Image (spheres, rainbow, N blue to C red):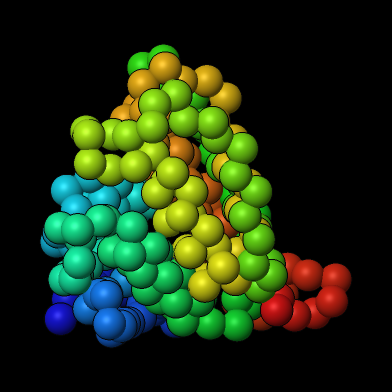
Length: 210
């Protein structure tokens, strides 16, 4: 899979992008990520709702993202959702490199009609997900289990080395709830991964983010 990305907007920082291929007995995923993009997304995972959420993540996080996945999604989308989360997390880790010169922390709220979500991100190098989001319905569109939203974010956080707190503050519709979470996550990721203005600064008292 090939994709082209514009140069990073901030001089003094390397262009941050990554390509990941993940093949298992259940899925085959090719993913390309540009952290300093314009939000151009191409997603073809075989799971329409996941494609929709990846589009929201990329557009609102201004990530250039190309994902192609094949596998056993027709049986159950669980493996595809989790493995795409893993691949995206690995790509984020690669693109962030040593994390020197980034803001490190980001948080955002995002509403969608009655739903309101908050996501807080720390590019700490330490993987952790706190997911406090009781989804109001068990499925979205009949074939996407609401529990897969948590599975995706756990896979992303663990493989990217991020500390992520997700709070669904209110919702009555599971589609709205999931989309609010992904949009808030996109905005928080965008804020946390931005260059700080000092390409030599390590935002940690330990002197390293790991």
